[in-house]
Length: 311
Image (cartoon, rainbow, N blue to C red):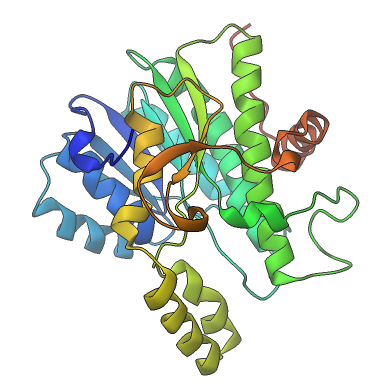
């Protein structure tokens, strides 16, 4: 794995990849890498206009087909419509990258009444994965679900009595909880696939380290804080690695042949903030199977999506 880059990715011809948040940051870089390897990439974007502009840029350098579709993870009806459209137009999905996210924003709610960070980062992806699971089963070969977490999962705490931070909202605490939820979900999905004897669909988690993307700027922008915007620009310049390099753990998790399922892939450099992909351990809370099972039950009830493992 040492020094693994996009050049080490296998050919992706005749593979269909779904990437959420594909029009910018890590999603953009991942989409370009998949398309350069010949994959058909379905770009699941909140804004189709921004998605089309990104696709136009990528098409200059990639051979794979790009299909831009609306998918607003803050609206479960949009998620359902996206999945239905995909089922109508494609036979299977080979890789699902649950990549899109929001970070450290003022408290808002999704169309379904979820706290925005928890709603987009976890519940939206939980619903999307469940709706696309039959298409992953139909993959001709091994399929993968790759869920993007963050080193910020370490600050997360699962409080099921106030999951949407209605009593007490801290933007970083809520972000940490959503990223911890990503890991609880990814590992629980892997366990449930294994329990049902499904060995040709893998669930893997990853994180980008500190990647210089637009994600860091949404919170300061929505707060209207030019000082915080300036501070974030300085922090990104000093600490961040490029979005292209930050996408490597996701790409490794999605394509490398030594991935077995249930792993956590992140950068191998100082404090896991930059570098090349390696297998890592997330914090102890992320492996709490009782919390994972409880979150799964809560997520099914909240989204109305029940996973069919093909019994």
